[in-house]
Amino acid sequence: MMGAIGILGMLVLLLLRVPVALALMASALLTYGWIVNPDAALARFGQDAYRDAANSALIIVPMFVLMGMLLANSGLGADVFRALDRFLWRLRGGLSMATVGASAVFGAVNGSAIAGATTMSLVAVPEMRAAGYNRGFSGGVTAAGSTLGMLIPPSSLLVLYGLLTSAPIGQILIAAVIPGVIATAALMLTAYLMVRRNPELAPSIGDKPAISKRRAVLQVWPVPVIFGVSMGGLYGGFFAPSEAGAVGAFLALAYGVLSRRLTWSTFAGALSRTVRISAMVFLLVIAGKMFGYFLAVSRLPASLGRWVGELDMAPIVILLAIFVIYFVLGALMDETAILVIMTPIALPIVLALGYDAVWFGVVSIMMLLTGLICPPVGVLVFVVSGVTKIPLGEIYRGIWPFAAAQSLCVVLVFLVPSIATYALRYMG
View 1 (cartoon, helix red, strand yellow):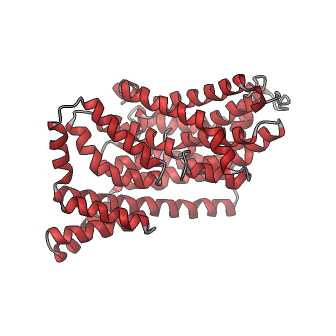
View 2 (cartoon, rainbow, N blue to C red):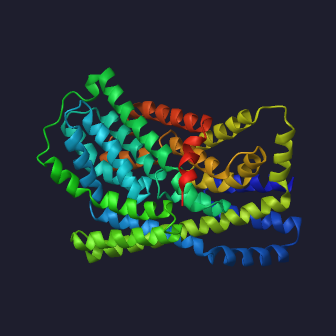
View 3 (cartoon, helix red, strand yellow):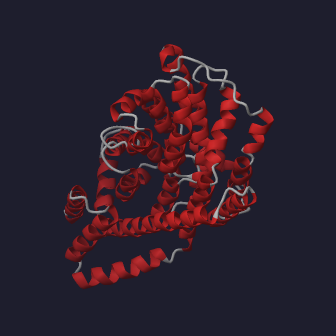
């Protein structure tokens, strides 16, 4: 009963626009104090907060964030888009496909959906509009492609899930690679089919880019190098996750300095944003751990696990119900908040059903990504609309086929778990 009351109190605080971390902490502190006593609650949470913040695994967060910020400030996103445009420009709708591909490649070294949405809005949307592309279609494909930054490693959501569950972060990052490639291909195919079905979305083929194919390849060499060294070293067992992040951040800094694209002001800006984002993630991890411990003391997850185990229902039906909840919440709340709130509740049920925690993390994050582009929240739609000045309604009308494609990818990985776990068999 106290577990249910604590969750209800947390939801009330969120409706009152209290920050997610503070709502989780307040709910956990008050209800744990009621179950045990206030002094024990204060002592316990003080110790837990220090222990969680002192966890050396948290160093992976600022390292990967810094790598993404440095590369974003080095203009790599624009280079990737122009390089892909050089190879796809002959196709009707090639600019839209290049936008999705560039979002995926940029996400592989950036890990931020919002940074990807901002970059592609500034780079790709003007190019599509100049070629006569439909405004809603241009904004929709940009917002949909930007979600890939949260799935393709190094993703902050994947890292946060690992920190919240104590699951191996390296395995979670590697498990998301194949689903990320499938999601990228699905979005590119969707853009191509939409244009084939309705040529008015992309009425003309753009002009041939002035850049040569060789030059286009040379411009984007940092992507395979940085991703290959950091993620390849992690996959081969040469690096721990934190070391992979540090190597990636160093290579990103070296690229920015050697290419002379990184100035002191942009470097300072990257450091400032890294500190702010890392502090937010740290606070969410501490709050999520507190909330999870409170739920464990209330025995609510264990009771739910036993209750679910006694149900005369197939495990896949129960999992489907959990993911429907994720999908509905994804359209109403911030994806990070959902991950922190739902993981301590849903994971014990999933484990009790005999499913793998790494697979569940990948699929649940894929489910959350659909919420990033669905009304009424759809944070990436707001970002693209704010940067491009395309009305929200037009973007929402242009984005639903991409949301459907993402949902099909979730169903595929849901029904065939080996898609996410296959690469782990050969991980060093």
